[in-house]
Length: 300
Ligand SMILES: [Zn+2]
Ligand SMILES: [Zn+2]
Image (cartoon, rainbow, N blue to C red):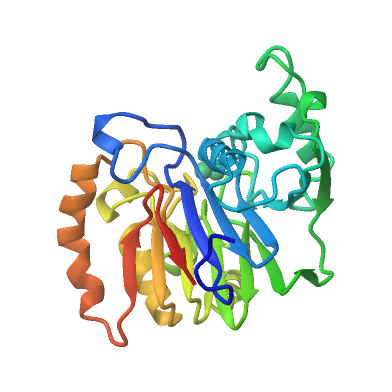
């Protein structure tokens, strides 16, 4: 494995952009591909979402650069939800076309059956030249349940996220004493800064805080500035300063602000950093906050 230390998980961001791919000169630093993150620990290979970023991940796998055994792969793909930006890359994920590779695709119990239908429908002849049957790898779809889910030494927990249109799942991976949480596509403002009353709100906020508590890495929806958020209430995405504040209260160690708005250019991020950076620098204990950047690999 290309991972320098076999005891650390290797987290790689392949796509960090929300909503729609945004290639071009103004996004080349933080990236234009839609969500995809890989977590590799020993023999356990995890993929979070199949946005357009999964294409480059697949090409590196095929290239042998990641040291994975193509033709004999075993991968676990966790789909947070089926909005287009989280599944649109799957038909371009070349390892799925290779016989002998094995994939288990996980999704919300509310979406199973349905999940298979959506993934195959996007490869219908009206949208794509080859159907799902062209994927020669061994694919299976598994409904998430309350049963304990362990992949090798990785323990997986999940929760439904209510505050996103159509629903969305957040995932937590406990690996060798470390915790990585993937919680994209959620409007946490509805929980921590509610404008209207929602039943069970207190229970939901407690669940969220417990889920992210002490995480070594939280990959969090941070699509809007606080000013932008005011005109996007109910769209299912969070405001950045609130994400930073809540993560700090939960003693999170590192926050990757993720699911960038398509309109945010590299320059915009750099300018925004000057505004938000002091907000968390003042906080003790210190927490590391950064914009998730396509191509970034980090050991956890
Ligand atoms: Zn999204
Ligand atoms: Zn979404």
